[in-house]
Length: 95
Image 1: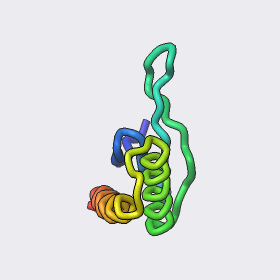
Image 2: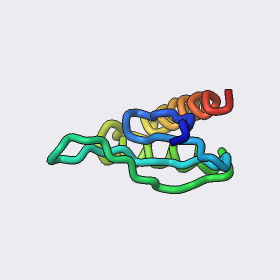
Image 3: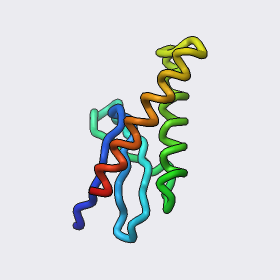
Image 4: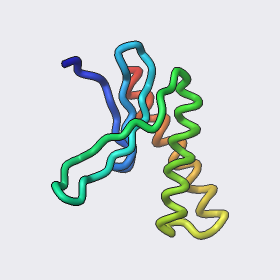
């Protein structure tokens, strides 16, 4: 089995480089019965820009759903922080 480079974002999203160079965005969940990690592919990307956009969007939606942000100012600040963090993680894949 081939080893693939991958990065983890907020213990919720994982990006893995596939054999052909494309990037797989995965959702990480735990099985309620066994506690085992389950990774479900959300989408496959050839463009890092599209991947970055979707990663930030999904993380922002989760923060809103969990009521971690409740104002426009918090939204703007978190958008900047997540964009930088996601970009840094993607840079690790390119190294």
